[in-house]
Length: 238
Length: 130
Image 1 (cartoon, one colour):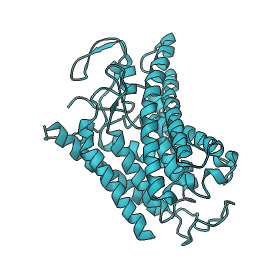
Image 2: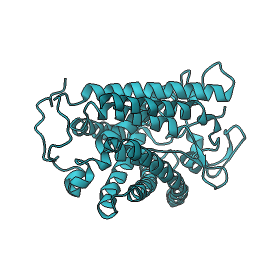
Image 3: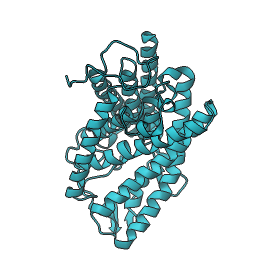
Protein backbone atom coordinates (compact mmCIF):
# COMPACT_ATOMS: atom_id res chain seq x y z
CA UNK A 1 0.00 0.00 0.00
CA UNK A 2 1.21 3.49 -0.71
CA UNK A 3 2.57 5.81 1.90
CA UNK A 4 -0.30 6.69 4.18
CA UNK A 5 0.18 9.64 6.47
CA UNK A 6 -2.26 12.25 7.60
CA UNK A 7 -0.28 14.28 10.11
CA UNK A 8 2.86 16.43 9.88
CA UNK A 9 5.83 14.25 8.90
CA UNK A 10 9.43 14.70 9.97
CA UNK A 11 11.37 17.25 7.94
CA UNK A 12 8.38 19.51 7.21
CA UNK A 13 8.93 21.90 10.15
CA UNK A 14 12.41 22.56 11.55
CA UNK A 15 13.61 21.17 14.87
CA UNK A 16 13.62 24.32 17.02
CA UNK A 17 10.05 25.29 16.09
CA UNK A 18 8.89 21.70 16.60
CA UNK A 19 10.57 21.71 20.03
CA UNK A 20 8.86 24.96 21.04
CA UNK A 21 5.47 23.51 20.11
CA UNK A 22 6.31 20.30 21.99
CA UNK A 23 6.74 22.41 25.14
CA UNK A 24 3.50 24.29 24.43
CA UNK A 25 1.62 21.03 23.85
CA UNK A 26 3.02 19.42 27.00
CA UNK A 27 2.05 22.41 29.15
CA UNK A 28 -1.44 22.50 27.63
CA UNK A 29 -1.94 18.77 28.18
CA UNK A 30 -0.86 19.11 31.82
CA UNK A 31 -3.47 21.86 32.23
CA UNK A 32 -6.07 19.63 30.55
CA UNK A 33 -5.33 16.78 32.97
CA UNK A 34 -5.67 19.14 35.92
CA UNK A 35 -8.94 20.68 34.69
CA UNK A 36 -10.32 17.52 33.16
CA UNK A 37 -9.96 15.51 36.37
CA UNK A 38 -12.81 17.43 37.93
CA UNK A 39 -15.16 16.02 35.30
CA UNK A 40 -13.71 12.53 35.09
CA UNK A 41 -15.92 10.23 37.12
CA UNK A 42 -16.81 6.55 36.80
CA UNK A 43 -19.08 7.39 33.86
CA UNK A 44 -17.00 9.92 31.92
CA UNK A 45 -13.69 8.00 32.10
CA UNK A 46 -14.78 5.00 29.99
CA UNK A 47 -16.81 7.31 27.72
CA UNK A 48 -13.66 9.36 27.06
CA UNK A 49 -11.76 6.17 26.28
CA UNK A 50 -14.47 5.28 23.77
CA UNK A 51 -14.37 8.76 22.22
CA UNK A 52 -10.61 8.41 21.66
CA UNK A 53 -11.01 4.93 20.14
CA UNK A 54 -13.86 6.13 17.91
CA UNK A 55 -11.82 9.11 16.68
CA UNK A 56 -8.91 6.79 15.88
CA UNK A 57 -11.25 4.56 13.87
CA UNK A 58 -12.97 7.34 11.93
CA UNK A 59 -9.69 9.12 11.17
CA UNK A 60 -8.70 6.03 9.17
CA UNK A 61 -11.61 6.56 6.81
CA UNK A 62 -10.54 9.16 4.29
CA UNK A 63 -13.43 10.50 2.27
CA UNK A 64 -13.32 12.23 -1.14
CA UNK A 65 -13.95 15.97 -1.05
CA UNK A 66 -14.84 16.41 -4.72
CA UNK A 67 -11.68 18.18 -5.74
CA UNK A 68 -9.39 16.09 -7.90
CA UNK A 69 -7.15 13.76 -6.00
CA UNK A 70 -7.64 15.16 -2.50
CA UNK A 71 -9.28 13.41 0.43
CA UNK A 72 -10.19 14.41 3.94
CA UNK A 73 -10.68 12.68 7.26
CA UNK A 74 -12.11 13.44 10.67
CA UNK A 75 -9.95 15.47 13.06
CA UNK A 76 -12.31 14.95 15.99
CA UNK A 77 -11.83 18.04 18.14
CA UNK A 78 -15.45 19.20 17.93
CA UNK A 79 -16.80 15.70 18.48
CA UNK A 80 -14.63 15.25 21.57
CA UNK A 81 -15.57 18.67 22.97
CA UNK A 82 -19.29 17.96 22.51
CA UNK A 83 -19.20 14.49 24.05
CA UNK A 84 -16.68 14.81 26.89
CA UNK A 85 -15.94 18.52 27.22
CA UNK A 86 -12.96 20.61 26.13
CA UNK A 87 -10.32 19.51 28.67
CA UNK A 88 -10.89 15.76 28.46
CA UNK A 89 -11.70 16.12 24.76
CA UNK A 90 -8.32 17.68 23.96
CA UNK A 91 -6.68 14.81 25.86
CA UNK A 92 -8.64 12.27 23.79
CA UNK A 93 -7.36 13.75 20.52
CA UNK A 94 -3.82 13.95 21.94
CA UNK A 95 -3.88 10.26 22.88
CA UNK A 96 -4.98 9.38 19.33
CA UNK A 97 -2.16 11.46 17.83
CA UNK A 98 0.38 9.92 20.20
CA UNK A 99 -0.68 6.36 19.34
CA UNK A 100 -0.56 7.22 15.64
CA UNK A 101 2.94 8.69 15.92
CA UNK A 102 4.41 5.97 18.15
CA UNK A 103 2.78 2.86 16.69
CA UNK A 104 1.56 3.68 13.17
CA UNK A 105 4.39 5.86 11.90
CA UNK A 106 1.85 8.62 11.18
CA UNK A 107 3.20 12.05 12.06
CA UNK A 108 6.83 12.35 13.15
CA UNK A 109 7.52 11.79 16.83
CA UNK A 110 9.51 15.04 16.75
CA UNK A 111 6.44 16.70 15.16
CA UNK A 112 4.00 15.45 17.78
CA UNK A 113 3.86 18.81 19.59
CA UNK A 114 2.89 20.56 16.35
CA UNK A 115 0.17 18.02 15.58
CA UNK A 116 -1.20 18.08 19.13
CA UNK A 117 -1.23 21.89 19.08
CA UNK A 118 -3.23 22.02 15.84
CA UNK A 119 -5.68 19.17 16.26
CA UNK A 120 -6.01 18.63 20.00
CA UNK A 121 -5.59 22.18 21.34
CA UNK A 122 -6.60 24.59 18.57
CA UNK A 123 -9.22 22.30 17.04
CA UNK A 124 -10.90 21.49 20.34
CA UNK A 125 -10.69 25.04 21.70
CA UNK A 126 -12.10 26.63 18.55
CA UNK A 127 -14.92 24.09 18.51
CA UNK A 128 -15.73 24.57 22.19
CA UNK A 129 -15.92 28.37 21.91
CA UNK A 130 -18.46 27.95 19.11
CA UNK A 131 -20.35 25.22 20.94
CA UNK A 132 -20.82 27.47 23.97
CA UNK A 133 -21.92 30.40 21.80
CA UNK A 134 -24.26 28.40 19.55
CA UNK A 135 -25.95 26.42 22.32
CA UNK A 136 -26.85 29.72 23.94
CA UNK A 137 -28.65 31.11 20.91
CA UNK A 138 -30.01 28.01 19.22
CA UNK A 139 -33.11 26.16 20.43
CA UNK A 140 -32.38 23.19 22.68
CA UNK A 141 -33.70 20.71 20.16
CA UNK A 142 -32.06 17.93 18.14
CA UNK A 143 -31.90 20.39 15.23
CA UNK A 144 -30.18 22.98 17.40
CA UNK A 145 -27.65 20.40 18.58
CA UNK A 146 -27.06 19.23 15.01
CA UNK A 147 -26.42 22.76 13.73
CA UNK A 148 -24.10 23.41 16.69
CA UNK A 149 -22.16 20.23 15.95
CA UNK A 150 -21.97 20.88 12.20
CA UNK A 151 -20.85 24.52 12.41
CA UNK A 152 -18.39 24.06 15.28
CA UNK A 153 -16.82 21.05 13.56
CA UNK A 154 -16.53 22.80 10.20
CA UNK A 155 -14.96 25.96 11.59
CA UNK A 156 -12.62 24.07 13.94
CA UNK A 157 -11.14 22.12 11.02
CA UNK A 158 -10.31 25.31 9.10
CA UNK A 159 -8.85 27.00 12.19
CA UNK A 160 -6.77 23.92 13.09
CA UNK A 161 -5.46 23.75 9.52
CA UNK A 162 -4.47 27.41 9.67
CA UNK A 163 -2.48 26.53 12.80
CA UNK A 164 -0.26 24.50 10.50
CA UNK A 165 0.18 27.50 8.18
CA UNK A 166 1.41 29.60 11.12
CA UNK A 167 3.83 26.82 12.10
CA UNK A 168 5.03 26.57 8.52
CA UNK A 169 5.59 30.31 8.40
CA UNK A 170 7.67 30.05 11.59
CA UNK A 171 9.76 27.04 10.67
CA UNK A 172 8.83 25.49 7.35
CA UNK A 173 11.56 23.40 5.72
CA UNK A 174 11.16 25.25 2.44
CA UNK A 175 11.08 29.04 2.63
CA UNK A 176 8.00 29.79 0.58
CA UNK A 177 8.37 33.56 0.89
CA UNK A 178 5.25 35.20 -0.46
CA UNK A 179 3.96 31.79 -1.50
CA UNK A 180 2.96 31.17 2.10
CA UNK A 181 -0.27 32.98 1.16
CA UNK A 182 -0.76 30.44 -1.60
CA UNK A 183 -0.24 27.59 0.87
CA UNK A 184 -2.70 29.24 3.26
CA UNK A 185 -5.26 29.55 0.47
CA UNK A 186 -4.89 25.95 -0.62
CA UNK A 187 -5.07 24.65 2.94
CA UNK A 188 -8.07 26.82 3.83
CA UNK A 189 -9.91 25.81 0.65
CA UNK A 190 -9.48 22.07 0.99
CA UNK A 191 -10.17 22.14 4.73
CA UNK A 192 -13.38 24.06 4.19
CA UNK A 193 -14.56 21.06 2.16
CA UNK A 194 -13.09 18.59 4.67
CA UNK A 195 -14.91 20.59 7.34
CA UNK A 196 -18.25 19.82 5.67
CA UNK A 197 -17.47 16.12 6.05
CA UNK A 198 -16.28 16.68 9.62
CA UNK A 199 -19.49 18.58 10.35
CA UNK A 200 -21.72 15.82 8.96
CA UNK A 201 -19.88 13.05 10.85
CA UNK A 202 -19.85 15.07 14.08
CA UNK A 203 -23.55 16.00 13.89
CA UNK A 204 -24.58 12.45 13.04
CA UNK A 205 -22.53 10.93 15.87
CA UNK A 206 -23.58 13.43 18.52
CA UNK A 207 -27.26 13.12 17.58
CA UNK A 208 -27.02 9.33 17.80
CA UNK A 209 -25.49 9.48 21.29
CA UNK A 210 -27.95 12.21 22.35
CA UNK A 211 -30.89 10.04 21.30
CA UNK A 212 -29.71 6.89 23.09
CA UNK A 213 -27.85 8.31 26.11
CA UNK A 214 -28.29 12.09 26.43
CA UNK A 215 -26.65 11.92 29.86
CA UNK A 216 -23.40 10.91 28.15
CA UNK A 217 -23.28 14.11 26.07
CA UNK A 218 -21.23 16.68 27.97
CA UNK A 219 -22.75 19.57 26.02
CA UNK A 220 -26.23 18.59 27.25
CA UNK A 221 -25.30 18.18 30.89
CA UNK A 222 -26.56 20.55 33.55
CA UNK A 223 -22.98 21.35 34.44
CA UNK A 224 -22.08 21.60 30.79
CA UNK A 225 -21.41 24.73 28.80
CA UNK A 226 -24.97 26.03 28.84
CA UNK A 227 -25.03 26.39 32.59
CA UNK A 228 -21.83 28.38 32.61
CA UNK A 229 -20.99 31.89 31.58
CA UNK A 230 -18.73 31.83 28.53
CA UNK A 231 -15.73 33.46 30.16
CA UNK A 232 -14.98 30.92 32.90
CA UNK A 233 -16.04 28.11 30.61
CA UNK A 234 -13.08 28.65 28.34
CA UNK A 235 -10.32 28.89 30.83
CA UNK A 236 -11.29 30.94 33.86
CA UNK A 237 -11.74 29.68 37.39
CA UNK A 238 -13.88 26.62 37.39
CA UNK B 1 -27.25 2.42 35.59
CA UNK B 2 -23.59 1.60 35.59
CA UNK B 3 -24.26 -1.64 33.73
CA UNK B 4 -26.08 0.31 31.03
CA UNK B 5 -23.13 2.65 30.64
CA UNK B 6 -20.78 -0.26 30.11
CA UNK B 7 -23.26 -1.67 27.58
CA UNK B 8 -23.13 1.59 25.69
CA UNK B 9 -19.33 1.61 25.81
CA UNK B 10 -19.25 -1.96 24.48
CA UNK B 11 -21.56 -1.11 21.56
CA UNK B 12 -19.54 2.01 20.75
CA UNK B 13 -16.36 -0.04 20.78
CA UNK B 14 -17.95 -2.58 18.44
CA UNK B 15 -18.90 0.21 16.00
CA UNK B 16 -15.33 1.57 16.20
CA UNK B 17 -13.87 -1.89 15.53
CA UNK B 18 -16.12 -2.32 12.49
CA UNK B 19 -15.16 1.12 11.15
CA UNK B 20 -11.42 0.59 11.65
CA UNK B 21 -11.44 -3.10 10.79
CA UNK B 22 -13.78 -3.25 7.80
CA UNK B 23 -14.92 0.16 6.51
CA UNK B 24 -11.33 1.52 6.56
CA UNK B 25 -10.38 -0.53 3.49
CA UNK B 26 -12.97 1.40 1.47
CA UNK B 27 -11.36 4.72 2.39
CA UNK B 28 -10.14 7.10 -0.29
CA UNK B 29 -6.47 6.49 -1.12
CA UNK B 30 -5.94 10.09 -2.20
CA UNK B 31 -3.63 12.23 -0.03
CA UNK B 32 -5.43 14.31 2.58
CA UNK B 33 -5.75 18.10 2.62
CA UNK B 34 -2.43 18.64 4.38
CA UNK B 35 -0.39 16.21 2.31
CA UNK B 36 -1.83 17.40 -1.00
CA UNK B 37 -1.08 21.04 -0.15
CA UNK B 38 2.53 20.13 0.67
CA UNK B 39 2.84 18.35 -2.69
CA UNK B 40 1.75 21.38 -4.67
CA UNK B 41 4.42 22.08 -7.29
CA UNK B 42 5.61 18.48 -7.47
CA UNK B 43 4.77 15.57 -9.70
CA UNK B 44 3.73 12.40 -7.93
CA UNK B 45 3.60 8.85 -9.28
CA UNK B 46 0.84 6.32 -8.75
CA UNK B 47 2.51 5.04 -5.57
CA UNK B 48 2.37 8.50 -4.02
CA UNK B 49 6.10 9.09 -4.31
CA UNK B 50 7.27 12.56 -5.32
CA UNK B 51 9.09 12.26 -8.65
CA UNK B 52 10.02 15.82 -9.52
CA UNK B 53 9.30 19.51 -9.26
CA UNK B 54 9.67 21.66 -6.16
CA UNK B 55 7.47 21.37 -3.06
CA UNK B 56 7.64 21.09 0.75
CA UNK B 57 6.76 17.37 0.66
CA UNK B 58 10.20 16.68 -0.84
CA UNK B 59 11.72 17.48 2.53
CA UNK B 60 9.84 14.73 4.29
CA UNK B 61 12.17 12.51 6.27
CA UNK B 62 11.94 8.97 7.54
CA UNK B 63 9.84 8.32 10.61
CA UNK B 64 11.88 7.72 13.78
CA UNK B 65 10.16 4.46 14.67
CA UNK B 66 8.22 3.04 11.75
CA UNK B 67 7.41 -0.35 13.25
CA UNK B 68 5.37 -3.34 12.14
CA UNK B 69 2.13 -1.34 11.91
CA UNK B 70 3.60 1.68 10.10
CA UNK B 71 1.30 3.36 7.57
CA UNK B 72 -1.65 1.38 8.97
CA UNK B 73 -0.44 -1.88 7.52
CA UNK B 74 1.03 -5.03 9.01
CA UNK B 75 4.54 -6.14 8.07
CA UNK B 76 4.34 -9.43 6.19
CA UNK B 77 0.70 -9.14 5.16
CA UNK B 78 0.38 -8.19 1.52
CA UNK B 79 -3.42 -8.15 1.33
CA UNK B 80 -4.16 -4.43 1.71
CA UNK B 81 -7.66 -4.75 3.12
CA UNK B 82 -6.60 -7.39 5.64
CA UNK B 83 -3.51 -5.44 6.73
CA UNK B 84 -5.40 -2.15 7.07
CA UNK B 85 -8.22 -3.82 8.95
CA UNK B 86 -5.92 -5.66 11.34
CA UNK B 87 -3.87 -2.57 12.13
CA UNK B 88 -7.11 -0.64 12.60
CA UNK B 89 -8.44 -3.18 15.09
CA UNK B 90 -5.16 -3.08 17.03
CA UNK B 91 -5.24 0.73 16.96
CA UNK B 92 -8.81 0.97 18.29
CA UNK B 93 -8.11 -1.48 21.14
CA UNK B 94 -4.79 0.16 21.98
CA UNK B 95 -6.28 3.66 21.93
CA UNK B 96 -9.22 2.57 24.09
CA UNK B 97 -6.91 0.84 26.57
CA UNK B 98 -4.51 3.76 26.84
CA UNK B 99 -7.10 6.56 26.92
CA UNK B 100 -9.69 4.69 28.96
CA UNK B 101 -7.09 3.31 31.36
CA UNK B 102 -5.40 6.66 31.77
CA UNK B 103 -8.67 8.51 32.37
CA UNK B 104 -9.79 5.78 34.78
CA UNK B 105 -6.58 6.21 36.78
CA UNK B 106 -6.87 9.99 37.13
CA UNK B 107 -10.66 10.10 37.64
CA UNK B 108 -12.27 11.66 40.70
CA UNK B 109 -12.72 9.05 43.36
CA UNK B 110 -14.98 10.91 45.76
CA UNK B 111 -17.82 8.44 45.26
CA UNK B 112 -20.34 11.15 44.49
CA UNK B 113 -22.07 11.67 41.17
CA UNK B 114 -21.53 15.13 39.72
CA UNK B 115 -25.16 15.44 38.61
CA UNK B 116 -27.28 17.59 40.84
CA UNK B 117 -24.59 19.63 42.52
CA UNK B 118 -24.09 23.25 41.60
CA UNK B 119 -21.57 24.47 39.13
CA UNK B 120 -19.57 26.34 41.73
CA UNK B 121 -16.02 25.10 42.02
CA UNK B 122 -16.07 22.00 44.17
CA UNK B 123 -13.14 21.64 46.53
CA UNK B 124 -11.57 18.40 45.42
CA UNK B 125 -9.82 16.80 48.31
CA UNK B 126 -8.37 14.14 46.05
CA UNK B 127 -6.55 16.67 43.90
CA UNK B 128 -3.10 15.39 44.78
CA UNK B 129 -1.34 13.51 42.05
CA UNK B 130 -1.44 9.91 43.05
